[in-house]
Length: 330
Image (cartoon, rainbow, N blue to C red; front, side, top):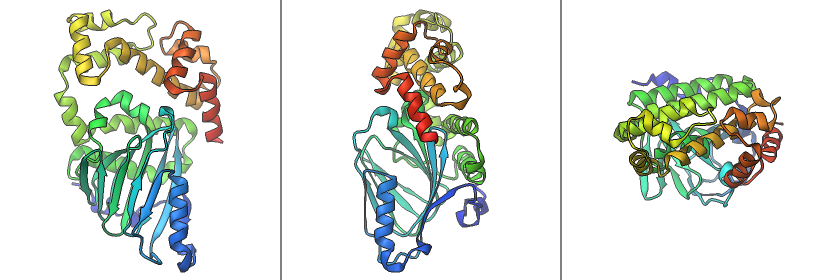
């Protein structure tokens, strides 16, 4: 059971985050306009309605978290709708939403769920969504690069606006981890931020919804994914080798992979290599490595072939990707 003292955000030390907005510092007659302006600037594509005049609470706190970001938001009752702006896949986020206080109803892709204290759900910024704050709410939002999450858990696409109840031990573990991250978020170095983001993405598999999805995945597919992750840096890794390791024909394993993930064995290998290379190009630990070295470390044998495949996937060259990451860091 979640420790209620931990879940009360007003008792949690938020010094690890930087304040973006606090309505307590704004004249009462300007609070609605200030809140609307700040929210739609920070999150392009949002539209807000239903905020009462002169709201008594309203704050946004933020910390960068490697390739993503962490927000703590306190809000009076409000309805939020979102329409994507057509940004490139590499700039899309999947948001983990932890309800720390109050109640929020989330709607996305013909699904909806009611979040109460300690509950979690996921929102995919690739698709429209609507959030209805029933009462005064405190939320913790972790925006994670969509490609990073989907490359690890493609099943997540089917779990948006699905309740991950706080009473579930896996959800409780993830909630505690996020709340503890609040203490140190702004003190983490770049490499530590990347490590924390990757660790949390791995922890997503402990939540109830994903755990069920993973349990329902054919065991041969799970074994194949583990084998690929272990051997991804090996340039000669082939679909035939993956299938042989599972003692199954490539054709049959390809069919199982397509049914479970929508990708063939070769397609998944390429997708994971490109995603890991993209992560490395944003990681300060690889700042001194050349683009060719990053390519070789992730199993690519031809840097020119890697550059072409990278641009097709992320709509930017590896050099442009690295430069954008450095700009965001500064």
